[in-house]
Length: 202
Image 1 (cartoon, rainbow, N blue to C red):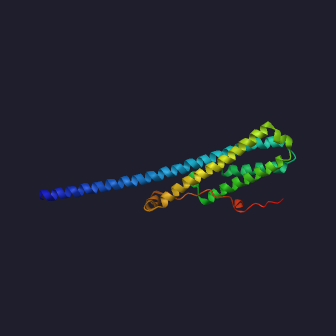
Image 2: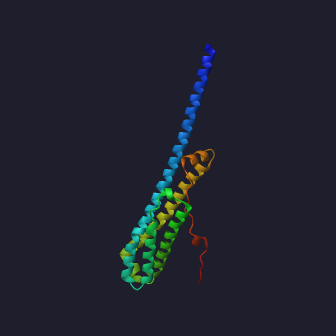
């Protein structure tokens, strides 16, 4: 084999090694990007659950405070307690189980609890002494702050899901995402009742 052929073969081998290493680095970078985005979704979902858990934990204290003033509003208080127990059954939804169906069940339970809390606040309006109670005011403020946090964390979660879903759907990432088992995640969507304008009567 002539010296020129040896050099030519060496150049081809070096070129193949560079292409293989470059391809490996590209795939490794893409995979690590998928993992990073997936972890971002997991982290933001954990924060969503954290603020829902905070609301879940505040409710017994709120109910007990109202019960002291409005004991005969038993039906409303029971509705809040029942809604809270339904939420307890779906609270621990793992990020990897965020299918549209599972997220819909989670949202439905949370919406039921939100509705029961709204009815409780209507009852509270009938009791001026309760509205002036320092413990109730503190709990109500904590609950209002928690509701705001829920909205913020749901928005952050949807942003993380959007970044993740967009990345795994782009070509050529789509091909590799499927091979590596990265599937689209579900978004938080508005509750069905929120789609209808409220009826306001004077």
